[in-house]
Image (cartoon, rainbow, N blue to C red; front, side, top):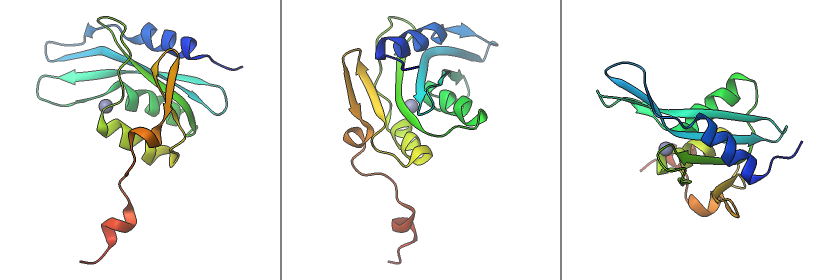
Length: 135
Ligand SMILES: [Zn+2]
């Protein structure tokens, strides 16, 4: 069953609810939703700890996808719990999406009517072969 951008945005907003787990940890400031090539939707939330640990909503949704045995993302979106605004993925998440999928055609939703391929947001990704290159 195809999912529209509006459906994915709605799924991200559903989990984007700022809450407190403990005195030191809050979560849900940002919610993310992704659509896989099999048509499944996975969601995740950001987690922030006072000590500086935590992670964005996108890797949280990706982890949920991986836990269900999938790894091919068609589209992904993240929204701010405060105002519902769509948030482009941070640099770390752009890289992480690429590393998990090896696919720069993954669509990143920037507005309900606008999506761009990951490659446009991440023209140069980390490459293992460059890391192994001798100086
Ligand atoms: Zn991020």
